[in-house]
Length: 264
Image (tube, rainbow, N blue to C red; front, side):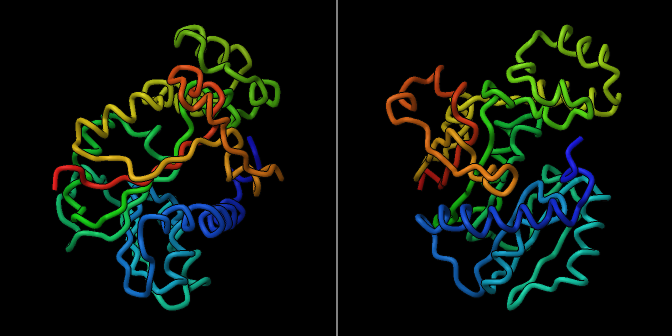
């Protein structure tokens, strides 16, 4: 398993870097971020993505069902207070919340939607926290890209470097993972990710069903987060390929997308 998945401080610093350099500038193409801007992150983990917003004076709420990660985030922010804004981390299931006190100017899910079951229902549910000016940001790896199954988290170095391994039938995928004596918790996590996988086409259909519309989207051949993780410069997917629905899933390692309400 990669060091970043064991070292929460390293993982947080990587989140902060990518959000500051790439996520915020992308969101700012459709939203103004000023002191007092209200920000919600769904599936926030330790909350590292929120710090660049809070440093700009935003009021931030992060919500996640993983209590251990939330506690790590709270401990981190005791020693690393944001300058200007605030961060509140909640151990909650987003489906159990219909009201967080107000609507938000910005809501974002970064590398989260591919882990959540019932994605179409989730998009509908997020409308509870939106107003006519809210920008809803998503970043996620389309399922069919070489490492869309997150197999890089395997402790076995051979398995963690096999592209498209996750596209095997589920029964065979599970057997391969177990035959290499992969940790049972990791096997279960990878099989769950296979169950909740999402393609670009599915994402667009779910948006339409939830009456949400795309304001801006960018397909990345090299994920911006790979810069801090692997030292690779981000590259956009070739324009011609982005117009071929099936093919683009295989060569797009991350989709960045700003979304808003479409029925007002």
